[in-house]
Every structure is written in structure tokens, then in C-alpha cells.
Image (cartoon, rainbow, N blue to C red):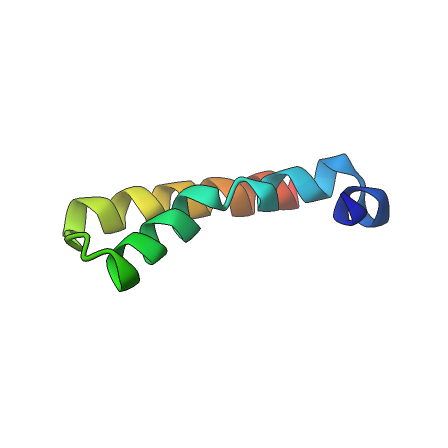
Length: 56
């Protein structure tokens, strides 16, 4: 909540969308999820979308 008041919703919202990446990394590191190229490609697409949204 403090992030929204400090940066505004327009800049803070894309970074709140990092949940899929965080959950995936927790799954791989701690829960034994299988790391595949397809999942990596999906994470890259999400990350590029967040970067584009944050910049424009």
C-alpha cells in the first residue's frame, strides 16, 4: 500500500504483477517444480510486458 502512495498506481501496478514470476521461482527452488524452456519463455513474455507497461 505504501508503494501505491509513494509512486502512484500507474507505476506501482506493473510491479505488483510480478506474482507469477515470484511464485514460479518459489516453486522451482523450494517445491521441486520442473523448470522447462516453455515456462521460461512464458516468464520472459510476462516480464517484457511488465517492462513495456511500466515505461509507457
